[in-house]
Image (tube, rainbow, N blue to C red; front, side, top):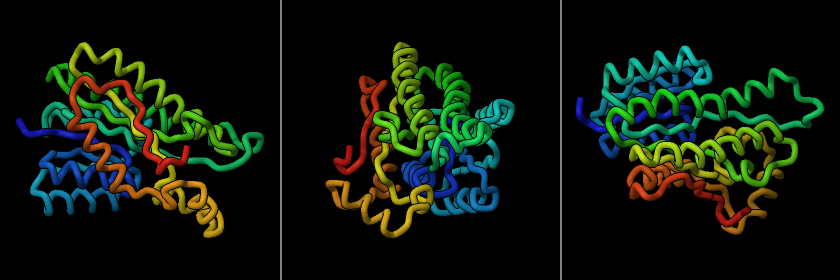
Length: 243
């Protein structure tokens, strides 16, 4: 298959689902991942029907090395080598560090950072064979400045930012670009843990006066897919002027 191929993690809802839709609209055949098997398969079916593309669902733990290796092998076998990888899967933990269990820390790092390493490792191998590719990592403003009561999440996203800059340098000679989007407050399920009062207070802090939408982040991701090859190793902040 010679068409454009993309892999999107965390594509059951929110930012990942919005990015998958925009790539499908551009004619990309897709492999998508998420933990909610029913919702992921339904998303794959809808994308395939609406945009006449192939969309393969791979439900499972994207932080598991064996699973990731198998998924990328199946993707290449059925669709061809990747042109685009979007590392979007992520979870948060809000609470005092002194009350955080080691298992919770490991779960955040596994999902938010280890998964980026694993997918980039296997995705880059396919891109190297094609002598081109785009890797886009979804990060957060907290990766740059840190957030109280979100030490694990901030650490994981800081790791994503450093990983992006380093891998961008490593893969630039091979015509593979690596960039990240540092999101501000986006209106997703992850941020619906806040009360109405807390959400209002957060909006008041943002100069744009509102939360961002998943579709806005998806449009930035698409712009990075289509950006010149000289743009690499960058962290693009999209936060309504907040930080």
